[in-house]
Image (tube, rainbow, N blue to C red; front, side):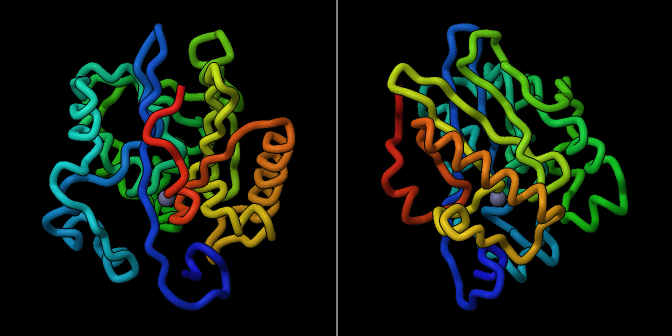
Length: 234
Ligand SMILES: [Zn+2]
């Protein structure tokens, strides 16, 4: 629990979401969940993190299978937008072979720095698969029509980013781990481990402003809020 809300004791069972966005110009995944090896041998993949997190992850729940269940081959996903490089966001990248990977340049550079990677619990095996990269500095409108926009929400990690998706029904903001839970946003209650607290608080302010302008926020790992997120939105 304190990994999600600093100072709070107990355990928290959380969803690990990934999002498929279908746009006329391409198919986009926002985050990729965990690597399938975790289904069989979490310690082999996660090392010491397996002491902190107990993964409930069954065969068929890996992102490639989830996409296939929608009738889409993993090999035909055009873009993967990574919010950041942690194992529960970048781990499934290995199963999406042909996508261009859209990531903030400062996140990628942190992932290439041995000391910083260790400090941040990044693992190269999650993200270093030779994908074509689109390194982004700040905001990026992926298709040039305002429908799918990456924007920087640094703080959780050096180059964390979130995604704004403009649906016909309105804007949805996928916060990822710049805001784990509804409680994070309501009380500025940060997790125990934050790379840059000031930047993390600024990211929360940005989310509140987007919400005040009518955006629907989908949080990174909120079990209660997740239960009310529809399986599909248009
Ligand atoms: Zn996460």
